[in-house]
Length: 369
Image (cartoon, rainbow, N blue to C red; front, side):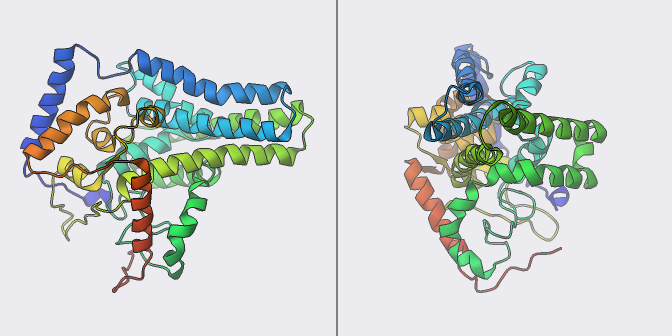
């Protein structure tokens, strides 16, 4: 479906003016759009948050079951931290002006069990281009157990999704590692998405399988060999770590687009959308918790989701500053700039929309095959 969607070419002045003003901000202040010292320190911190507890576990220095569990939980936060604050910028080409650095740090996703190529297609191409468009944006496309879009098929159990969704959010990365990465590389190959990325399918299959084996080897097999702990307890530890990571990632990304006030636009019969790409991003995206400094630091500035969607190639450490430019320009052009004051408020708004989407619609949408 995404291949036939066309954004409107009307009202180009907004993004033209915004892009010029943001460019002037970096030029006048003589700063790079990419990572700075703050970002380098954060990168080291996030990798330590993941690797230090792993080293403690592997050394055998920690034997108490509760302390081992705590180490796994910390590793989960480290996994989320690498994903939100390092891998995310790198795979957007925003971490460095040098492509090889972005590519290297982008593969940190493979280090923690995922796959960089699949993520680039699903996130950079489909989600960032076709945000909140039914059957084009995989983040809100039909997924059976959850109904994230008013145009998705309704099933009777969706009326409880505002209750059970939180449990399934924790399974996010586990599903990616075990199932989705394999299904996506097959699907993206068949529909031509990998060809558009100029990817060598044999090479990408080799990378996927090799890095999955490396991940399984160091996260599971090595502890089984070195530690006098039952294999099933180690497996539980891995699941705990990934569950924490999946839950953190889900509750950060979902309120940015699946929240009260978000638009879910559909193209007309000819594939045309009402707005141009930049205005589309404003209408489908919401910021939250602008004033929470540590929270914003940990989640890679993704509470400034509007800035991220409009300028994904700018490192997130600059989002707070350029948010002033974006909000002022949007107001000047009479366009929405959606913001929820607190993270709690954003989560509650997300929950309310889940409940609303869980209600049986007057006319149940029919999902085309």
